[in-house]
Amino acid sequence: MSDEQDPTGEIPDSAPVGTWALLCLVAAAMVAAWLFLYFGVFLPRGPIH
Image (cartoon, rainbow, N blue to C red; front, side):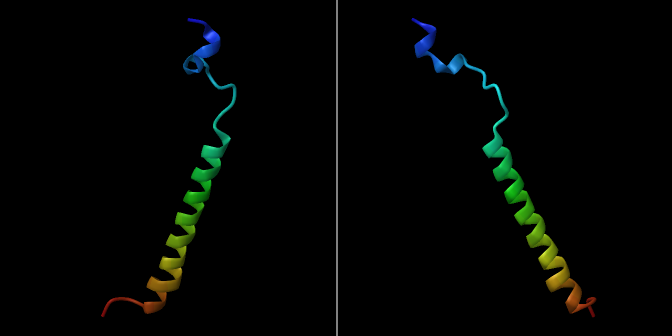
């Protein structure tokens, strides 16, 4: 069996840039949603009576 036909042994030279970009995009969206809920929904309603 030749090494040319077995791609499973290859180690990538760089980090998975697309995965990190997607992770950062989703994390930023979650932070933005949390900030909107906190400052746009919860704080304007005031304390519990």
